[in-house]
Image 1: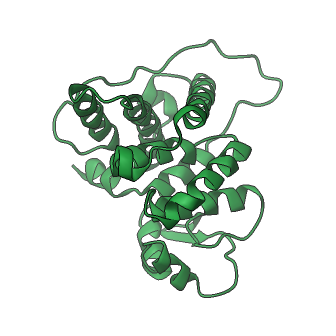
Image 2: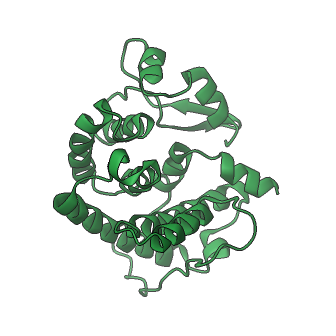
Image 3: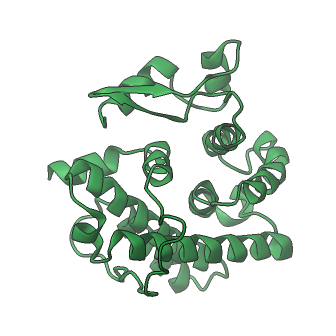
Length: 240
């Protein structure tokens, strides 16, 4: 029960930090065998973990014979990977203990999965545009954001941010998600972030944001429907 409660509480940003901080296969190391991660396909028990929610949303989408259901299937897999990484931190276990794959095998699989998601999402945006809230609903918008948030291609993330900018002005994409992606790109570019959403644990029970641009950060956060920075830092620190 404690683990489930923690996983429910972990925000997209917290999971993103966990993903970005995982070690990668060292250069020069032998290429690991192309093993795959077994993803859950059915909900087993209460809806207390993110991947289970996306199973439900995928099933509902298919039942309604809608055309955009794949975004929920991909978000389920992305969420499941992120939660495995969260468990390694929360339970102090190796990735092999929680996934059945060695670290090298897991890293290789995640890289392939991320590249495939990038290619799929970019093709989808080029052919049909973003998953606008007005047309596809907030759930699809959030699922697509979760995929782009974890992309390893910052140039692709920048292109998506340009696509989202006019949409956020008209409420056709999540303001908070837009802010998180904007901050994530800024940190990758070694620039100051605008909203203070990206950071790291700097000690036991202490989380600190990476450098933030000058000006009233809380005013900017309010505009993007984000909680005050002090509350956010306190919440994030509970995971350190």
